[in-house]
Image 1 (cartoon, rainbow, N blue to C red):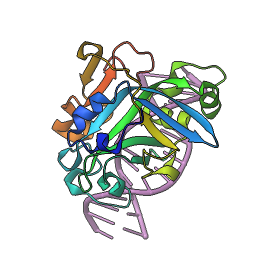
Image 2 (image 1 turned 60 degrees about the vertical axis):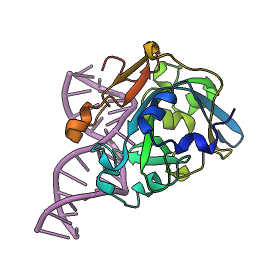
Image 3 (image 1 turned 90 degrees about the vertical axis):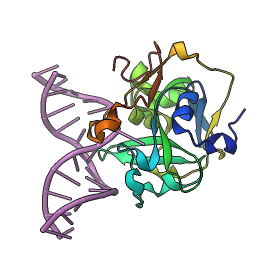
Image 4 (image 1 turned 135 degrees about the vertical axis):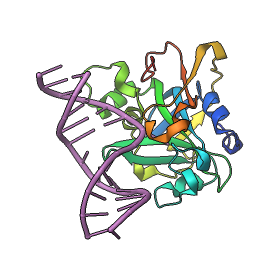
Length: 200
DNA sequence: CCCGCGATTCGCT
DNA sequence: GCGAATCGCGGGA
């Protein structure tokens, strides 16, 4: 079933980040569907999280999407090159988001391979946040799009993982966040070959 | 207005 | 393993 709007209104962005493992993520552009199930996420806990774009209630043109009601996509450009897909959660005015770092692809592999410019399909096709967005055709053009749209949506297909199968570790690339860089806000499915950095 | 740097990835060594 | 690519944000002047 398609995850309903109410699913994204949860105020606990860390719990939601954990729960997203095993949920299916799909895009459809020009009738072409691509997607798979989520195997790696990171929670960004709004105004009190030094690693978050919205830390200190920072409200700018870029971050305003994070302040929308949960259930929309926050897509931004990083390093001038890579687009990053986040799932906005919680109520309007509470800027929480979950970075999708890796999926296990199941649908539209040939399309993703073409978008990624890969001669041969390898696990890196959807490993890492920039790779996920590129494989799924996601760019800032769909920033703030609803997850109830027919372009981007999530589904629960009954797949889930036990706590034994999930690792909770510090986030990647947020050393600038001081103490908050140590928080175990990154979740991934142990042993899944699409996880971006299994050993950290 | 200017400048440093980032929730990264890829290719070359 | 290292460094380039590439651009907009955000802080300070």
